[in-house]
Image 1 (cartoon, rainbow, N blue to C red):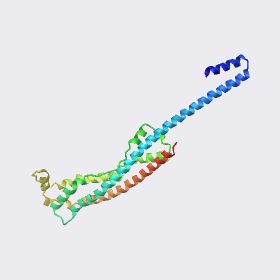
Image 2: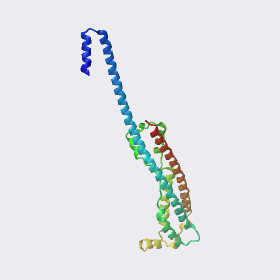
Image 3: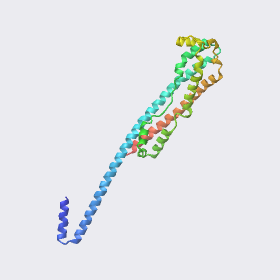
Image 4: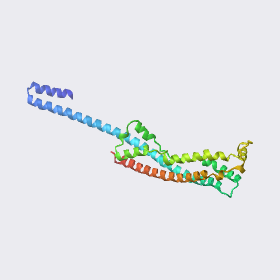
Length: 249
């Protein structure tokens, strides 16, 4: 092809047809420019496709993480549904109709499940990978980008969920040791001690403990409300992601 064009130029020059040569040269320049523009267009299209595929990949991974988050919230709610009756069961030690032996028996019944609690923390793997690679701008939908940043920057372990952990641990640290009476320790560990006896147990007169147990139920209910709001945010994010994936070229 190049030899063909060189031959045309040579013939035009040898025949002294300068005007025709000028138009020919101009046409050749135009063809070169068009070729360059087409190449740039193809290169830009390829770059756009690569960026789009990366965006799709990240959004699909984030969507999977969000679905895991929704399931995790369901798990927290199911756990709390079982935990509240356990806390209420522990509160029965304050009943004045019980003996101390019965109070220790109640403690034995509820102490193990009482030590457990659940909090919600989102799965951040896909979003963190995108941030680490400095590709957050790949998300072209501005509304979705802002919503994702807001969702993942929220402090989920603070406020109410922190109180769930704090109150649960405080009750365990301060109240549970009081149940280690002489008889209870003998039953659990087979040890003879000089610890206070069951008859000397006064845990049922501790106002702070019944207040903490009641407060724990209250804070668990607040946690339930909070994680339900988180789930609504998740559903909105998934909807935005689906909309973005459908509308993108």
